[in-house]
Image (cartoon, rainbow, N blue to C red; front, top):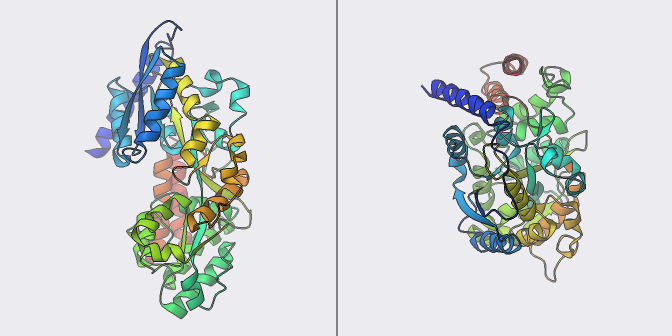
Length: 426
């Protein structure tokens, strides 16, 4: 039944995209008073003051435009926006990540920002991050806030394991050695790879694996290099060096274990240290930060959140204008000072907040500095692609099958390749 409903929804979206692709455009005359609806993902009530004040500033500069803010729980956003688009009640601006937004872009349901935003303004954003919102040659979103992963680690566990508390692993090879030593010396785990998200695919790219051919029509990972990267996690699991819960739990479990003192390394965005600060202040005190762990390529990953404008919006120009306002350098720095995230506007990194540690810095301040320092060298490693969720799930299920010895790694990788090729050829 779920599959039938999904296909019905997709059919409805495709029909709507076709109907709206050339009709309901701006109509945002300077003298016309309009109201645009702005959806965010789980920013209320924590960021009410910031969002409301930013909207107020925008409305003051644009007296003919009123913004109605609607906050949607993270877990509900995909379902709600699909339902809204299918019923022609989509918001004018929506806060999505590139992978999900690409589902709507695949249906040609979002405006092309390369057409709506002038070249000078586009150049203010990090080039790689702007390109991460590209699907089929069109840019479907404006980058908002970023998170560049940092290696945050428990120095006390490092000392217990006989490791240098001032030196975190820099590569996956070093990480494997640390995982072995931590487990054998302390009984605890070094790290928790979340296999419910994009972590596996991102790390494979860092290890030099091409996921697809250049035009993204065929899988390209079923080779010696792909098998080696695949086996990195399979071998760690079989040797008992990563928790068994990786098969059933995700990133949230990694945070829980870290703040419980059962995990030596939390590889994540600095913003998650706020959670550690609240729940486990003693763990925060012994936390240090280092650069993101990478592979032979030296590539660093960044996660991006963006703003998109559905084609069915009757006020596209106003919606884009608001999106550019809330993502400008000044407003992004204000947001970044509330929560340890990073701006998508390159000039915003020149703010002293990202360059100078305060007196008596906290571990959160230090993590923010590490994250900001590597942002210019970071990129979104998994570009929007057709059927991304199916592709990601196929790879994650394959590695879990190999971990449980239901299949050999070679057979599991071949099965993932087959599923990817079937999805990409549709």
